[in-house]
Length: 306
Image 1 (cartoon, rainbow, N blue to C red):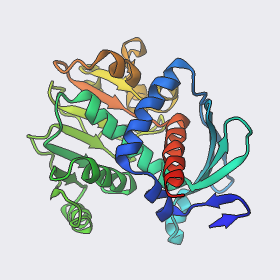
Image 2 (image 1 turned 180 degrees about the vertical axis):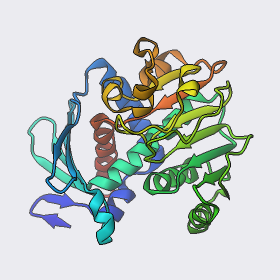
Image 3 (image 1 turned 90 degrees about the vertical axis):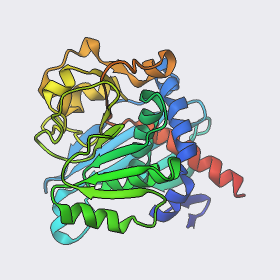
Image 4 (image 1 turned 90 degrees about the horizontal axis):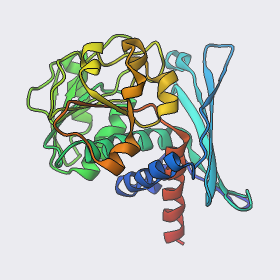
């Protein structure tokens, strides 16, 4: 809908503006810009609600546009039958500061998060994956399975759940996607990559690190959360999407007491290549620069439709 000159897009419309092919490319470019300082994206500000929720403020600016993502995370909404995340991404002209559009915040977050993982697959695997396992069947898993279907049609994808009925329900819901879907409670041995997508406070992946298996950690976004065990992390080359944010938010790495001097940013692999002969863990925590990249995609799609 439009209010005067500012277009406001709901969740479905926002998803339609964020194709994964374009989004992965935009985030790859933004990653280089962010590293060079061409995108300013300070660490997110967290303001508590009295009822136990939090308001997250994430601005970012570049030469062409600025964005401000403002989202509220309210765990108590589950008991009310409401989504736990609400919010918006406001997009502004980089020269005049004028409002350009407003995007659905949870949709932007889910799709750009999945796109960062897809960039990880592209960067840290020597060839396109043939079999990927998703640990977790919640909201983040939804965004990732849609991304895999868009970028790797025909791919084998195994959903690993805490129970077989839960994993099977996730698979049944997504049978329409062009993927070979399997449901299980045990991790298969022949996967190229494992993506952890839970909010667990204890590791859900503790297998020995090995070269040829890419591990992408997505779900642990607070210090008290941890999806990947210390022994796996300490035996791997670790990359992060945002080094500044990871030091405060990557619970897996914080709890494992990793040596931060050995952790490399994603941008390093983009410019220097990845050590495929080593076990690799790619940990993501998110960054407003990736939301800015998503806004660029949305604006390009809007412009092409007019």
